[in-house]
Amino acid sequence: MLSTTKIIELRSHKHQFGEKWLDRPASNCYTQTRMNPPAIAIDGPAASGKSTVAKLIARELGYTFINTGAMYRAVTWYTLQQGVNPADTEAVKALLPGIPLSFGKDGANSTVMCNGNVLSAELTETAVNDNVSAVAAIPEVRALLVDKQREYNTTEPVVMEGRDIGTVVFPNTPFKYFVTASEEVRAARRAAQGLTDSIAERDRKDSARACAPLVMADDATLVDTSDLTIEEVVAKVVADIKSKI
Ligand code: DC
Image (cartoon, rainbow, N blue to C red; front, side, top):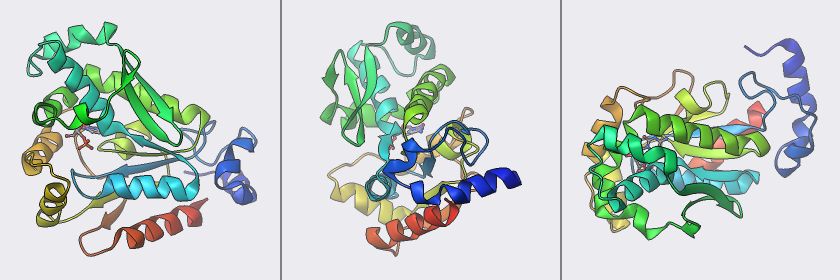
């Protein structure tokens, strides 16, 4: 719950919305990240449009866009590179302490690097698509990456997209959106991107896992993008965020 004091502080800092937020005094408007800048959580299934929407919201607000799926994909890619079977949980865990991945930024977007080289096309290889759910189900992998995800928000406001951002990474943020679309619409969007992985199967695995499954947070706002344009979705979410700042 927000205290009265916090609500007043929140209102008095309304003019600092956007890039100037970082200049604000250390106090902030919600408990878990009281010392941190705002975190906008965008969760949802594969090909729901959440990446596109999250990127545009970040641009509109002047926040950094963080693609957490790319982080899980990078660990999966590295696992495969090492010749380790992603289904062999103990072997994947053994790779983690020395993993040469780093998570940074290029302008307003997050980047993933391996030994200093930015990873890009590698992250959507078929083998990565097929194995990322298994790797993302390993609690030790999630713990490592959740720490990195929170680190981004210690210094800057973020729009972060994934599966567990509103439930696990930033459970106390008041800015939670669960973006979805019908299965037909999602399959068509995936095909238009030239990707043919089985999103229904991946969503099933992501939703069924024991650790941080894909579920909508109780206090998230549901955004169905099936019959809306990207612009309409972005405008709706940005208006909601601004009404809460
Ligand atoms: O967003 P994406 O399709 O690139 O995500 C790839 C996989 O990573 C997805 O199948 C589930 C996993 N993932 C996750 O478990 N938690 C996140 N926060 C982001 C992605």
